[in-house]
Length: 380
Image (cartoon, rainbow, N blue to C red; front, side, top):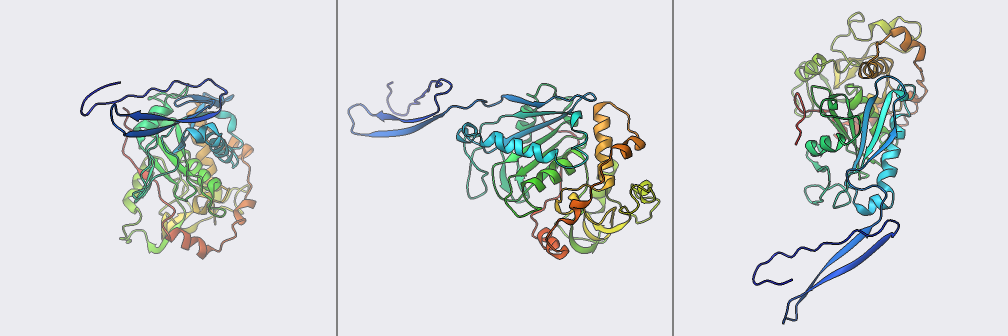
């Protein structure tokens, strides 16, 4: 209330009662004996869920429970109070389970929403600084969050612990309409998939980003099948994409089952599907993937890991199911997989852009390959 020279003034605003809605006002500071005033604006919003609170969306009814944590970043108090935060997260959860095999195996998952209150609304960049709960901001390589805060908040979910974080997918919904999804992956299996609420045309929309980044990279550990340039991966020297060493390192971790550096039908990971009557009409060996046109091979003409269409290839579905079964503490059976597998490739032909238009989109560097962050994540 008083002081001379430089002093610190602390203003404390009491919580308003629930149901009070929105209110705003000003705190006016007047220097004694001086005709000088300064003001600070105070806004209060009434919302159901506060910072750090957890909403259990669903509890697994099969297996030991596979954990998914959805959080939003760059949503301020107004966004939370008006329901924008929860609407965005629920929309993302709906997209995640709208594609096979997640649709069929949904009962294996624990799904949580953790609320993070950001001081500002919207994702910042080098020209526009905005404060955010999880540190998300656009940098040269895409959106970069604060991994330690993300893992700290994810562990607020009832079944998520530091010991289980390597089997938990964190999906971070970014409050921006710009395309720019990216997934950060650690060698122990931990992952953070950043999914902006893209308003680009299908299949590069919000739905496409959630299914490609979270469903494909974050949980499925699948590799990109899109192409940047017409190069052999073994001789490519560009700086815009990873090459053979990075590919083999990911393979050594048990990732990227949907890709191969050999075209030999007996050595590719999907060799058992090529002559299986249930898959032989679609599964084969196609050249192109992992950003390169030559010497990288995929199993089907198109899939979600190429241009975000709502369809995972058969080998991708199998890789996802194997991971679900492992995390749920159950044994995997190929015969059981075939029995439950939903082969719906109809959506694979829904893409309206030409192949070369898709190449042009990829060449724009809007699609970002996963970033390897080291063996294990850091915790505060």
